[in-house]
Structures are given as C-alpha cells and as structure tokens.
Length: 246
Image 1: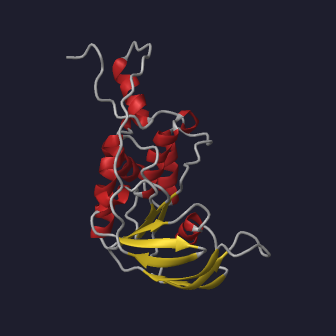
Image 2: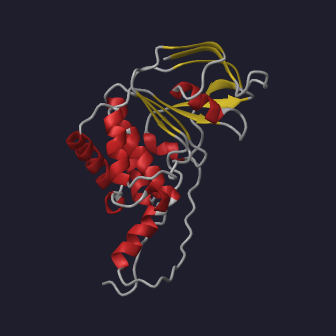
Image 3: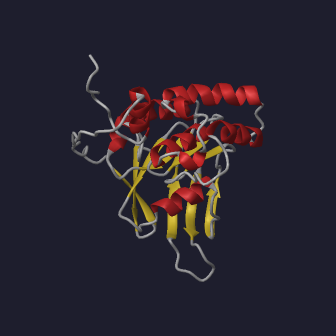
C-alpha cells in the first residue's frame, strides 16, 4: 500500500489536515503512528481505512478487506452484542453459524462472553471497544486500522491484543495503529511513523515508556461477586484479589 503526496481535509474550503503524506507499507508490516494532538494522526488513519476521501494525491494498492477500530465504539444502537455481530456478519456475507463461531472464539479471548446478551447501550466504553475489536477481526483483514486500540481494555485483553495483531500479519495483513501510552513495545517488530504538521516522518523506535500501576480498593454491594468482577475487568480494571476468597 502506497501513499503519494496525500492531502485530506474535512470541508471543501477548510485547511488541509494532511499536507502531502508520502509512505509505503508492505504486507505483514505493523506501523505505529505517533504525534501530538492535532497533528493529523486520526485523519491519516481514516484516510487509510477509506473512511474519508483523499483530497489530493493518491492512495494505491489498499488491500480489499479493510477493518477499522475507531477510538470510540458507537454503542447507541438497538442491538445486543450477539445480534449486532450477527447483523454485521450478514453484511460481510457470513452465515449465522460462521459468525457465531468466529465471534464466540474472539469473545472468549477478549473476556466478552458474559456480555453477549447485553444491549450495546448498556456497555462500558471498554466493553464496547471489545465489541469493535471482535467486529474488526470477524473476517481476516488485509488491512487492520486501529485508533488507540489499548484504550479502555482490561489487562487480560491488552495482553491478548499483540497476539491478535501477530495473527493478522502472519497472514500477510497490514496493521496501522496509534499509541499514545507506549504499549506498542509489546508488538515486537514495528515501524514508527511520527506525524508533524500533516506529514509523516519515519523514526527509530522510541525508548519504552515506564509503566505505573496504582492499587485501589473498591467496595461494592455484591450478591454475585463473579459478575461484579467481570464488570470491573470489562471496564478496564485489573482485579487482583477479592476479599473473602481463598
């Protein structure tokens, strides 16, 4: 996939957000995009994913099957998780049994299974992102584009994400993502693009960011502790111990 002098903006007479991006990505590569807020990272992801058009220049050889994980999954929809994934599976030409098998396997890996009958509007932000990730991987993508994919995920799902990316690239897929928390060091061999003033520069891998953990105690009225633990983990908490358990 190649970007030649790509420009993009959100309105006809607006300023260009992308101002001449030149880059190339090969099959099986992972690209991590960094840069300050407003530099154009999310806009570049949307252009690569085909969500907004190229205003000038050319984007060539984009893979046919593209999956897009936005920074916020749109949960304001009248579906349960299961019915939503089935509907999206039909859009992608999958029958129900194929969708259920693929979605079920991914849901198990992302600790989403307890929420399959939950309405999308009742999900936390982190659980909604898991639904978006399952949808993105429902069919094998030739191009996987993710905006801050670790954001809101619980610790177990964060640890699973590099494995899922490896599976995409092992099949020749391309992965392009943003990461402002320094988690991309878990991905192994990646390329680093720095976004400045609407253009891309390739850079060496940055030094790994130090990781900080804070331990808090949460008191809840729990008649069903297992359900409460599942909800906390889905909201992004790493539950280390439950009082009263051996």
